[in-house]
Each structure stands twice: as structure tokens, then as C-alpha cells.
Length: 488
Image (tube, rainbow, N blue to C red; front, side, top):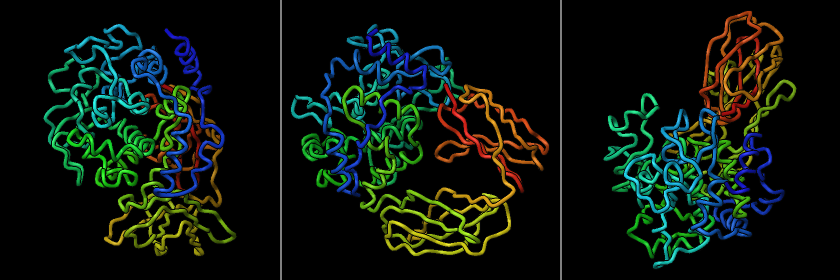
């Protein structure tokens, strides 16, 4: 075992607290938007990048950046993004050794899934080869190269990623892998024609839902870091599959074919950055000296590609603050294309909302609205309905203002936790209440009813992925907000 890998394993038991974080001032020059911001990010992430050696990745860098804890917490395993099930136990595990069984395949060509892993170019090398040469640093860029099961790597081949309708193949295959320990055997990978709107790919490879956002952000990185090479790559290698992804005629910006960009943006939103992806980004920085800005700052995705007109209006900040007898709402929005208006909605229970006004979209970066007729209640909730000219809309996150009779007097322990969690309230619940657990993206992960009079509540969170979560307990007069960290 190499020395750096041993150090990494020791740090991993400490919650990665010693892994390199974003250097101070790293993104200070990222001040623009659209193509300007993309150019600024290119300059940041290309400066200081170390060209690694492809043949040594499996022995030196990948054991460091692609090692994680197994689901049972008993061992450290290599993270195969195609076969690892993010919501349950692994079907099989790999290790960092150079032995074929369980480790790196080397010259071995196994016929069975789960035997060993090899190096996969998520942006296929056939897409960026120049003649017979493999240009560095792209060929050994850790944001492109990932460890995956040998057979799944072969099945993916050079096929572009996309959502798949009628699959010609899937993993796991029903009835074939009887010992696959993931009831009810969810489908992780699929091969077949793309069914993503506007993305006409005859044979596409659909990766697991749990890594679609990771792969989307990797592609945003690739289109930024190698923007100056993208045009020649797409022209030289047309027919390999790159033509479905890259717009060769506009390689600097937006780089993507717009329907493909829309699909990746949806993946980015549906599968947000998590602790595992952040940790890998930090570790790659220790090895090759640059970072993925779309992991560090997910909002850069909208900021860079908003001028294409295919990225929906995104609220980058939404606040509600009580001012005397009114509430002032402020929000910052990305570029508005074919956009009509913001409808301001209000609620006293956080569930049932009604409209209280509208603000026309005029491509301002900063908007404001004052609610001068406040309802009676301990908490008032606000959200924005963002309406396009064609009537399509999306909703913003919720901002809340507390007035009176609310409390957050609660202790959560153990925190962090691997499974059991106790919530100790300082005041008994005055009426039947609802307990919700949400993730950092605001998605509801757990909900249950809690009887009046309770001062202590036990919940089981062992099935939640690792990360930070928020607890909300509420009734007609009380509100408890707390948070906890789930460990693997």
C-alpha cells in the first residue's frame, strides 16, 4: 500500500477534515457571466494543472481519490460509479490492489461482472484522440478517468450518456444475477436509444441516478477546461459519438449541443453535489493541482450557460426579512430568456400557498417585493412561481419568517450518527405534529406524525446516505428546526 493512500485512509475516519479545501482566493477572478465566466473559469482551472501519467493512475492517484467506505463501514473500497448502488448495499466490492481478483484488472480480460476494475474515460478517449496520440493532460485527467467494472466499461464503450427509453440491455439483468443483494434489484445502467428530448442518439448509455449529477458536472468541467481543444476534437473525431454532445461550430461557447446541455442541466439539478463528490474534488486537487468549479460552486452552471436560453431562470438567493409590520422579500435571478413574471406566493402552513402579487421579469439581477398585509400566525412562508411566456413555470425554494410562539429548543444526539437519532425537546408538543427530515437540497427524505405531549422522539436514519440533514417539527403554534450529520 502506498504511503499517501495510508494517510488518506487515516484521514477518512476523521470525516475528511484534513483534506484540502478550496484555496483562499481561488475563484476571486470568477466575476463574469455566460461566456465571460466560462473563460475566467478556464484560466483558473488550467493554471497549475499537473499532467499525470495515465499508466500510473491505477497505482498512485486512483487509490487515493476513488476510495470510499463500504456500506457496512467495515472496509475501504474502490468506488465504481456504474455498479455502486448509492441507496443500499453494493452488489460487489473492489479494492485498490493490482491483483486481478477484486482489484485492478491489468492485462486480465474477465468474462464475469464483479471480477475486477479498469480505467474508464467518462469522456471517451476516442473523442479527443489526435491521430494515434492521446493528448495530455486530458488523457490522464482524474475528472475524466474513473474506475469501473471491466465488463460495464466494455458495455459502455464509446456510447454517449443519455436517458434511455426501451433498453436493449440493463444492469442488473433480471434472472441473471440472482445473488445481487439489492431487493428489489433496481436497474442501475441501461443501453438503448436515447429518449431525452431533442437528443437523438441511436445507442446511449444511461448511468445510475446517483451519479448522473456527478457526470454532468464532470462534463461541465471538461467543456470548460478543454474549451480551446473542443472544436478540433469534435471535427477530427466526428462519427465516434462526440458529435451528439459537442457543437463543433460553437465549441468555445456554448460547447454543448443545446438539447444535450438541457439534459445534463436536469441531471445536475436532480442529483446535487454531495459529500462524496466534494471529497473527491478535494483529493483530486492534491494530486493534479486543479478543481472542478461546478462542484465547488454549483451555481456556476446556471451562470455560465444561462445565455443559451435553455437554462431556466434560477434564483441564486431568496430571503424574507420582517421590517416592522411588513416583510421584505429579496431575490437574485440568473439571465431571463422568454420569461414573463414572478408570482409571489404566501402560506401559513408551508403547504398551501396563495398568490399575493406579481413582479414582471425585466432581466434585473436583483428583485424586491414587500408584503404589507401579514396574516396571523407564528410563521409565514414565501415562495416564487417563475412563469415563462409559454405558461410553463417552476417554483423556488421556500423562505420563512417567524413571528411569535415558535421555538427551536431541542437537542439532537448522537450527532453525527450512523443510524439511531434522539430528539430531546425542552418543551412538550402542544398538539399533534409533523416531523420532516430533508436533505441540503430541500428534498423530503422522511416524514412521520408525532403525538401531542412528546418531549423525546427517536427516529431511525440508517438508510439515509451520508451527509447533512435538517429536522423540522411543526404544528399550529410551534416549530422546531435542528440539523444532524449522517455517517456511513
